[in-house]
Length: 372
Image 1 (cartoon, rainbow, N blue to C red):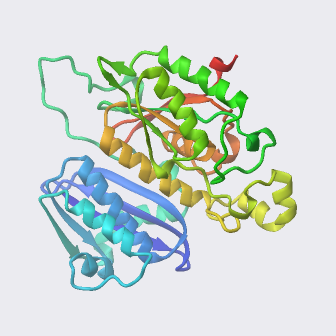
Image 2 (image 1 turned 45 degrees about the vertical axis):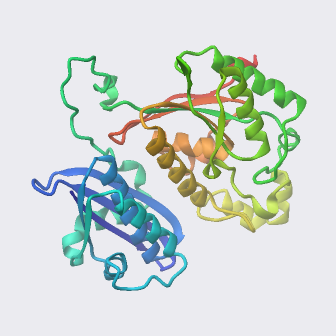
């Protein structure tokens, strides 16, 4: 397969985005498109991000040999091993690209003029324009071989999605002392309150009564943020199902920095201009913390890793408000404004499915019927 990738930044650093397209090497047919905005960063970071996205798409399509074509001389020479990678911001992206490349039988890197990379360039510009929500379905998988067995990979209803989805049951943690006063609670490691423990017990009982989580002696994976409140919630579910909990750092809540522990009003009074800007621009971080764009990239990476490990399975993901909203945003293919318009209650349950052809389906949002 052929991977063409590009990235750009309007300001360098400035509002950035990447684009990648995967093509059949024989027919030239487009098999996958990927694009996303990156917030404020540099051209080179955006270019490497496009490369990583393109290699991931090729891997999902089952490519064995990949020809990477980019108009970035820097990326091509560095990935070919002819130039050293000195900038610290590029080193982890380059390593991620190397790790992905190692999964193919062969990967070749070729520099091409910008005019020959117009498809990926168009996608990157679309991402920089914030037009991510209008992209077409990201990945189309080859048609599965025919079998006498029931075809569980057929098209799913009117969505047109194909393949067996990875189904995520998204459970928010229960009440903590911070949530009682509606304070910013990010990396602060607070436990559940007594009410919070009863909330997660109710959620665990509900999940234990649902089908599809236990097959014989096998219990569905339960993956949680490593913070105490989410681990306690996940452990209640594991006890009810007879499973075990694993943690993933990518599922932790937003780092609210200096606003940690403050109420909305207190944060607005402390940093009025910054707080107002933060509410309207997902690329702006809290003071000493991280931006929602950063969280989006982190959670997207976590999602991709979970799909790689558990593709086609049902998982229970126990996390926080922002990561769960971010996963629902991916499922809805929506913009960052969803973060401010969607409400999620404590111990609420949501469901999103991600299909191998790049489609997604949100099945449930903020269900708290088990708390009634």
